[in-house]
Length: 581
Image (cartoon, rainbow, N blue to C red; front, side, top):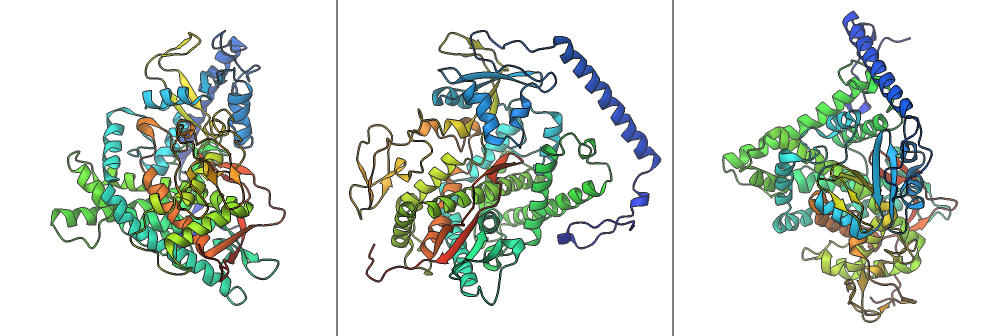
């Protein structure tokens, strides 16, 4: 057997002698850690066993029965049970007020289903519920210790949050849209070209190609893979001025592969390998840790160099070819004196938040279009009006908030039905009095099941139905779509085929971007990006569901996505010559 292991392919080959990896001191350290963890585990098990069962958290609140003697009800949140396990904890066990209680290991937790309770928690507390030290360590190694996603709260989080928030100015979003328009057009054109060349030239299977459609008129593509290419290009160009060129080539880049590796490694370490002690200690020179360290080094050095060079340009007053989010971050950080490392962690956070979640949302949106011809037709109609004929450049004066209202409504429905983050947590910073008179003390762990709040019929009537008309309305067929307001806007919604008789969306119950001080800083950026990309695709392309495909969901780290990818038959969209929009 070879004495060497190979690093990820995007680094080339880096042989590491296995026989020299573990010195006797490394083994002593490993044994000491094992003994320490064993003693801690035995002590915790004895403490729990002495209690035998966990009592109800409050006699007036429903409490899920039969907690595991060691884990409590934690198993319901395992990756295998997914959203259905969350439903057992927070919906099936809830009282008429939508309140449920349960145990996570030896920590009591409370969950809410009513939007008003969820909003009170999110707007009143910024501190995340206590996470295990192992989870925190994995997050730190993935995104850095200065990321607003990893900091639990406090002064440092407030400073970092303030800087990032100030970077997303209206001018920054205007500058970002120019690259969004260009990249969305390039991406859809590349897929059209792949369809034209389907018999002579194929995209690599590693990059989403799954074969020619049964009728020979299109190709089958996995859009979980494909949409990642355009979203990482948008983040690269808009955030720090780097073009990965994934949209043009429909292939992953050197740095995107490094990030993808880190992301998958993080997901594995907090899920299936959570109890593997060898994944807890990143300093151990195991092949897996060496690969992770190499990936992190490649990506962090890349981002640090970009930050350093851009800061030098600002310091020497050199003219900038075009401004990006990093420039706005540097402007906002001058008063806070943030280091290059803190800024690079902010860029990595933007990369993580904008890369995966946006691609997941776009994949679900494409599926919704493929599954409902009515919605697909209305979306294509609006896209063609706003963007022009298929293949033409996207107008510079496009205003997605006014010109792509129905496309945005499809995105909102995708986020409502399939939020990338199915739940969020908080630790109450002050006592919270409930309507039944019970007061939850400060420090209480609160779970908010976003997935089920947004699928509750009390919050969204006919919740399983995809209805963009919850968010958009127009007075008659052919009129321009406008954003639908909440209660008080009682206009009838009219489509080409039928009336949609649903009330306006309950925006307090829409928590895909969270709420309060920890809400998604890049919400406007994300909606702008996804609406433009979806519009460009639906104008040029026609999606169809693959026969036999069943949409299921899986957990990957802290997000949920289609378990079996998102394979869609993709054809060039044909417009009738007599069709006028």
